[in-house]
Image 1 (tube, helix red, strand yellow):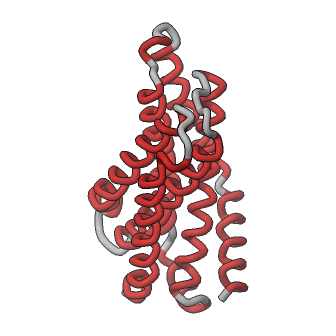
Image 2 (image 1 turned 30 degrees about the vertical axis):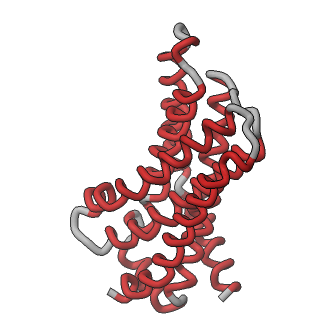
Amino acid sequence: MTGRIRTLLHKEWLLELRRKTVIAGLGLYLFSLVFICYLSFALQQQALNKTTWAALYWLTVLFSVVNTVAKSFIGERKGIFIYLYTVAPAQSVLLAKLIYNTILSCLVALTGYVLFAVFIFNPVQNNVLFLLIVVLACSGFAFSLTLISGIASKAANSNVLMAVLGFPVVISILLVAIRATRKALDGLEFSASFDDVLTLLAINAIAGVMAYVLFPYIWRS
């Protein structure tokens, strides 16, 4: 299975390199969101406190990640599904998608963080805790949205279904991530965010297990 997952990851990477307009569009979208935030608060520095910074940052990451992960199954052509069905088991396809989308989501979040630090300001005091929250939250987004993308790809009006199914999940992850990020901005110790980290881990575990169990049935349909 490891060899198949590695091959599928390589396939995802090659396809991403061929779709240069998608990468450029994602970069422009992320830059535009950050630049709008900069223009909105450049003349009102006092209005942008740490809580607002955390909320704006995670909303920017969320919108960018949704646009990135939503195409994982919805954007695939029917012929690709048939081909993958004949050469790899459902679990390998799912794990490759999960790993790839998690890495891509983390890269988007880190790029957004750099842009926020350059254009607005960098209030993060506990960098280790902040990076841990970024990895856990992005993993939660990737796990949940990948499964929902697989479900939506089998139905009509897949984009609408993706939004309806994904809203309750991403909102819960978003609220926990904002609360934990606020503590990282204040420089609090890890123990102060232990419950938030545990909640994100639980969401990731539930989403991962559900995806691993349910995806084979979705794949066969």
